[in-house]
Amino acid sequence: MPELPEVETMRRIAERELVGLAVRRVDVGLPKLLRDSPIPTLEPLLGETLLRARRRAKVLALDFTNGLTLLVHFKLAGQFAVIRPDGTRSVAGHPVPDPAGHYPHKTTHITFMFGDGTIAHYSDIRQFGWFRLMPTDDSDDAIARFGFGPEAVGENAVTVDELAVKLARRSIPVKTALLDQTVLAGLGNIYVDEALHRARIHPLTPAKSLSRDEVGRVHEASMWALTEGIRQGGAKILHHKAYPVDGFPAVHARKGEPCMHCGCPIAKIRVGQRGTYLCDTCQPLPAGVTPPAAAVAETDNEAGA
DNA sequence: TGCGTTGTTTCACC
DNA sequence: CGGTGAAACAACGC
Image (cartoon, rainbow, N blue to C red; front, side, top):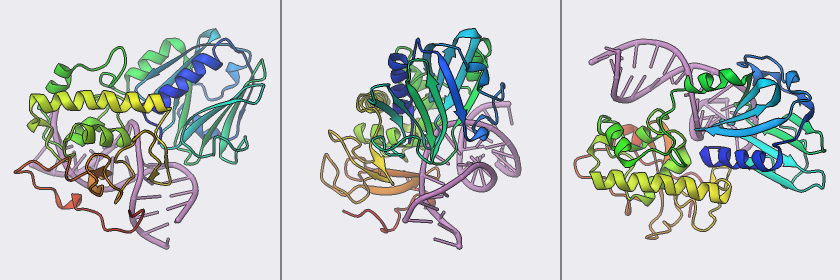
């Protein structure tokens, strides 16, 4: 499920493969992906050249000549497949459709064709993603309206001090606080589980109860999880089952499978209405914290050890 | 078949 | 008012 690492991977692909190319043709097979777009069609992009690929949180911003910017959000299941004239590919985002399969796929909804023959297919099996075309001058405001907090990773990344201040006034579970994009932008359900496992902190721990050392561990682990995700070009999770590469992901979508650290079976609970994976041994619930009834362990019915 | 799935928005409530 | 929890929303696979 596309989070910051998948979007950053796409940004890098666009920067490397698409910047400098002119749009020769655009096919939009599912116009509702543009439902909230200030400019209602992609036709103004015809003939324009991609100047730059930016990213803020999970939003991709593509700046074109003629003062146009296209914002893209992958939501649950967006995917870009860039196919060069020689047939080689770079794919980022959701693992469906199969990156090695035939394109356009039946879930391919938007296709860009560039002047040199390079093609970029946007596919989305859930159709939750969106495209918004607007003047570049408006794009910073449009992004600002999301109210994103500091980036979780990269040049302008949040500092430990900033994170400590934000977490200190929240009584909600630390996992829920970290998913709040106004606290820290870019962590999603997969990487937050990975970060808390590495930091050895139970997701239900109230954010404000974390010690300075624990906040430091959360900070380091969040950066690590996202960096590792970017290094791998995204986490390999298919049909709610993880296929770890180099031990990552270590917990997410691995219910019942052995913890990579201690061998105990990974548990699945519900935190803030989100499926949450953790190792009860490596991430013990602090004394005095009682899990809400809604967080009880889910019964076994899938993907056992 | 209804539930789970996600990031984001909205809303009722304290 | 702000923090919180929960629901809604988009569509589809199992």
